[in-house]
Image 1: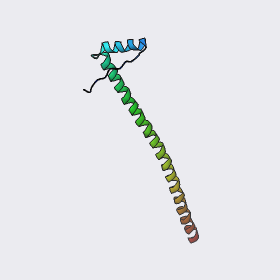
Image 2: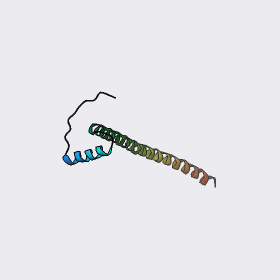
Image 3: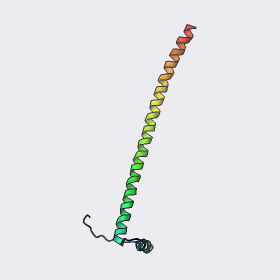
Image 4: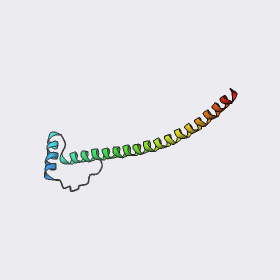
Length: 91
């Protein structure tokens, strides 16, 4: 295990009581419980950051895809107009 460092943490009494209740229910002590809680919190924050980056990426790709679709539609319409003109002239 990595070297442990002691820190001082201030908690509201009701939060400490809730922590102590969870500690009593588990096989951990307070320090282990708080370390685990901090790891879970950091993992969740990391996941949230990844989701936010993915959301931003999807929004950017949606704008790019929309621009490409409009460009292709415009090109397709020009080709269709030219084709219909040729058909109309051959009648």
